Image (cartoon, rainbow over all chains, first blue to last red; front, side, top):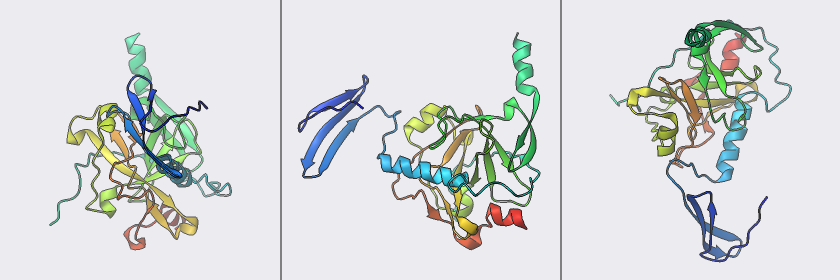
Length: 90
Length: 164
């Protein structure tokens, strides 16, 4: 991992168009400002890790004993339909 | 050569899934996830399966790793005021232009013994129905949770139904 030291208001460029600035430092907390194009998702890594854990659990891989021992159910390909948004309240 | 490419898309294939048994599909029915899924970045090709008796769920079944299948549910069937405001990167990367271009489904987590069930409203799976390209998108609305509890009466779990 590349480790860089930065002072207040100094920045790091990631590629040509992602800029990360140290906005504030207060004891054990660092505030970062991120300038990135709208097409690049930026999230706290805890959120991403939580999604990873949930996906792993959804897939039944979290506990190794969850081996699919039950008889195979006949399955068919599902048809996906578009949803325009929340249902209108009636 | 073009004919060959066309044939490949329509060619029928059969695969044996440990959970669901034999399934026949054509290449044109495969949904591609070019960015994979969080926790499964290497898995790119999926099918959506419905299993008789499991209404309310469809399964996102990986073709690259047959052991991996995630249950998905229509978020509006459980939370009719759900609002999935897609960030720009989502629309751009999936090539979504119109409202009826895409569908949104959410990953469900079934707890031990199916007692607890939750649905990931923060990061829905968005699929472009025209290109059959999908991506799991993290919404900017922080009010939604990765593990939103599903009221038990709202849906029977896939496991419960499968055992009956």
